[in-house]
Amino acid sequence: MKKRYIITFVILSILLVLLLFWNIGAGSVEISWADIARILTGNALDETRAQIVWKIRLPRILAAIWLGGALSVSGFLLQSFFHNPIAGPYVLGISSGAKLVVALVMIFLLERGITISSAGMVAAAFVGSLLAMGFVLLISFRVSKMSLLVVCGIMIGYICSAITDFCVTFANDSNIVNLHNWSMGSFSGMTWENIKMIVLIVGVSLAVTFFLAKPIGAYQMGEAYARNLGVNVKALRVGLILLSSLLSACVTAFAGPISFVGIAVPHLVKLATKTSKPLILIPGCFLCGAVVTLFCDGIARTVFAPTEISISSVTALFLVPVVIAAMLRRQEGYRCQAILFQKTSFQKTASTQST
Image (cartoon, rainbow, N blue to C red):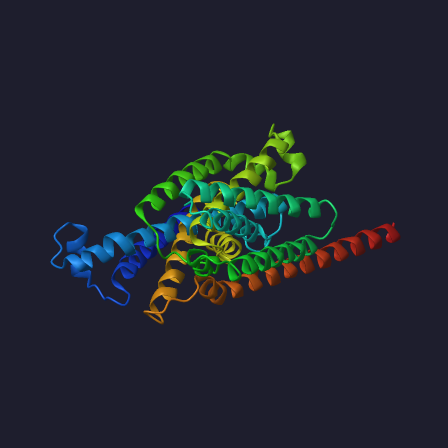
């Protein structure tokens, strides 16, 4: 199994490096690999191309890597919390809640000529994420089927998105109207100041998440099992909520809502590693999420260049089949368990009658 883990991480690392160089070179202004090497080493022959790489493409690439990884880990935490394979920030409406609060705060401040900092946007998104998560938790206490919880989360997401669209559409300020691109999901316009804030928030959150890997593994086996091992289940559940909300809030604050990455990537990593151990899945989800998001952002940016399409459209195109396959696989697992249970019951009944 260890060999499988190493092979998976090596393949993902190679893909990440190749996609990084492809995203640097591809676009409306093509840059050769030789020019990329000279630009990165400080020996650029063309200053214009160097400015494109350092001020536009590299910040965008790093944002896609860090935020894509953060979104995937957030999805893994939510799936662990709800014991539901199709739980995720986008599906449960958490990203939409964050988007709504960020949009409202920006509209309120921009109409008064006040600019909002990166930290302020993350704080607003975090509040929105917690509010949406609160609604989802309230609903979870009233429903018995997790499929119904997902449907309710989708409805919450639609409501938040509708309110956000109304606010953006009828806003007067031109800067607010330009929020439409952000509300659809995009990594454009990233700066090095944004990257510093992203690395700080996501880095600390990932470190705390990795520290909680063993308690999360025990929690996956059931609350009773976790308590027997000395895990404070209530504190762990609060930690999972805060960490998943903060990670998804950071993504929404800087890039808007990005669909299906948080749901699909944990399944891809589990399929590749054949394990459910958090010690393997947490770094695996981050690395695979970075690869998937960077690939989808490159497609969104280059296919119809210079026109850019929403990254959520690309992620939906590639990742929805993965989600459907995961749902069918889970349904097949339930069916096999039911057949096994019926056979066992029949054998017990037959043995009782024979005696």
